[in-house]
Length: 529
Image (cartoon, rainbow, N blue to C red; front, top):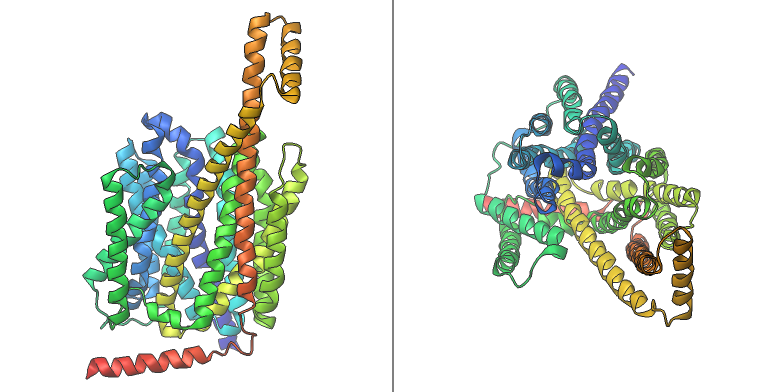
């Protein structure tokens, strides 16, 4: 009985420790966005330079995640978690001391190295210490950080930028990081290490080049000149590197990213479903601040407050969803959850300037409830089918794929938003002439009001045309936002038939795992011979 209590205490303290690291890493992906205009003014740089503050952090995370599985196997998950937390904390401190844009970019890379390792190694630790029958609830609590951080980030950052020093968005991580390192060092147990595992430089170089080039091209696709030979060279090099990497991984006895794990069908299915759901989630995270700030005129902090109830709902229902998963499995949660997510996202795609803010909040909360019943149960069900010694590798593989899918979703949504906005603007502008009865009536009405306020006929005519142009721009931008939400609806709709492929809880005592373990044994025997 005493041993059971001690083990239970260790499980929940380990959970608390890794939640700190996960929350910090994901929070920093969103908290910096709001501060970009401020840093542009401080460092006196253009938006093209300033956006690299975000891009270099994202690219570094993409490069380091595949390496995390190897490092965890070689040095132990605890050691890598401590190193990741320390590097992230140091990077945060250095970012707060940046004196120009180049110093900031260099320090953001350091921060990204730590942040990129934190999430996959945190998940690996949880699966190593939490028994199968409690993983759903534990991962639900851990998922609170993953879901709430992107929503809380803009609110917190908006408050800091409005009322405090912008550097606090980085220094706030330092005391939390120090506490996290201290708690991890005394509370986490050492995990088994595989001293014989070898590092393959070719794997690392090809994965880094391929993933970084791919993520960069995805992130910057809307701004790139595809006639530029360097961009085309980067595309060809990235694809070629990934081909070499995949071929090498499939034949290497100790791969950096173990692609053979994809033979475990529930694990592969869970990655596909969570990637699709993440793409739907990022759609709303991407466009709602644009709607609230650019169209309704909210400040970053106020728009964050609108989205805060959905963040709280995601935290509550992540835990509830995890508890239900432990009892009934993933499938009974996934099907209604994906349906509810699809309906809520579709209703959001009908936004107008007269939409009640309470309607927006209610739909965002419904989406968060649905995501709480889908993302973590799907991820946990897949990871439960992975042999325990391969958990670190599986976590690295899953997080790499999800990182790429998140970048892909932002690229797709940005392209859709800009394309629809331009098409709609051209269509509205062609109709908005004095010969159009509706437009002509509006122009004359605005002109009359302006003349009554004291403007001359010529000035009133010019001002009314400018007003009409602004209204057209506003409506076309709103149409673009709604189009991106339709795409997000399609992403969540795609997840519904995929959830039907999930096995029931009893069936997930996976034959795939047994087959995979046997295949590994055979390959090991061949390698020894």
